[in-house]
Image (cartoon, rainbow, N blue to C red; front, side, top):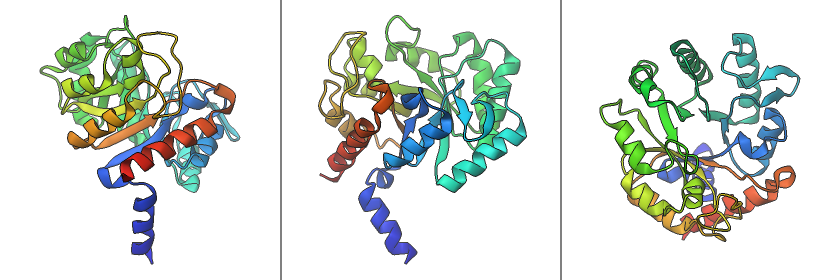
Length: 267
């Protein structure tokens, strides 16, 4: 029976076969608590979440999704997630300004079973972060906000990776590349072998900081080309839907986008 259920699940979720963990950045639902976001992510047909710092936890648990939280709070969150059948795979975008806080972030990630820390650290911290990545066996994914943020261009990311741990790579935010006038497929090609995870967006306009999210496959981000390139690279890792529009009622938008991606992969 279990074998049949597994086949059925992979037919419904063809990304699983490719080694992709398709989930959502909780920031998509940042007008709500973390556990309200979890319910919404679940209703979109997704089982993975990327938590972000500062979101109110909710669900009767005090505090925010802050990496300083105590063990009791972490335990309550993990139990609730287990009941829901959703796994927290990434945490970010998070930054720290001292060695002690970076260490705390990695301790928190380890305790929560998180695979990827997503960040835009000052480059002076990369040698320390390389050591932490190897010690904790956790990846650090360098995220690109639009130009003029530090890592906006893949060339900057590639230069930063030189001589660092193999566990440091890119969190490719394809929407922010499009906002900066870059071609997401070309950017992925440059970063081949270094893409740890993605923030997935389709936008209504190129080269415009004010461009907004649209359903995947209906905008200018060349979603089909991106999917083809990820397949070609044999990418395995986390893909976080990040829909930053229609904030109070984006569940139908994310659901339609997820459906599009899964149908595109079945073709």
